[in-house]
Image (cartoon, rainbow, N blue to C red; front, top):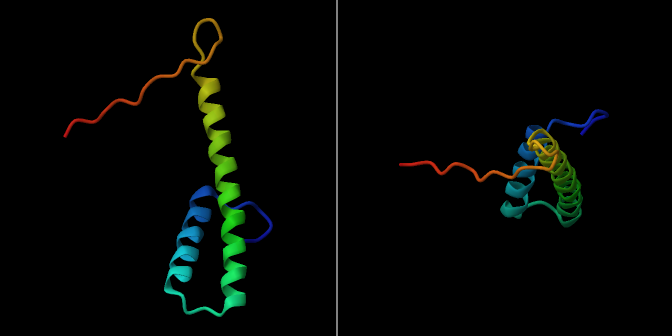
Length: 78
């Protein structure tokens, strides 16, 4: 990935490509190791972005006393 951090969605798409390539199993070992390493870096980056998003949501969901308010997700009915 070039200079700028890729958007979360682009990183996730690249991870899917990496998984597919590794599952296919026809790449030489050196290439497999290189894309595996790229995948681990992408996982770390995506995890960091998700953590930051969660922190932002918690910050936005503060109650009257300033403490975070956790609300359960609404269950969808079929």
